[in-house]
Image (cartoon, rainbow, N blue to C red):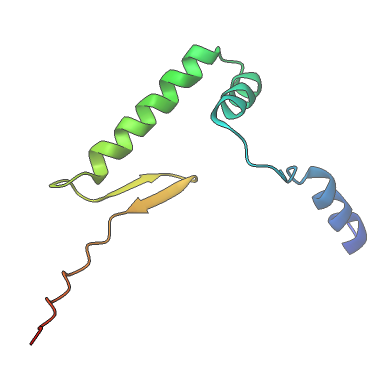
Length: 88
């Protein structure tokens, strides 16, 4: 049986690393291709398709929301127009 100290130690050891700097696109592609054992071109193709998928779901006259399960949820919020200011 795990004691609370051992359980918290296991959580700390298995926790993902916190990144301090913003990753550029090329660094992100490099990280994904090494961790997923894919080539850089394959990773670029997958991310390119994901971008096109999002654009198709978020443009005008579409459903206005898109979800990549477990990663992100994006929706378009339509705000009403502001009324014109009356100048005298």
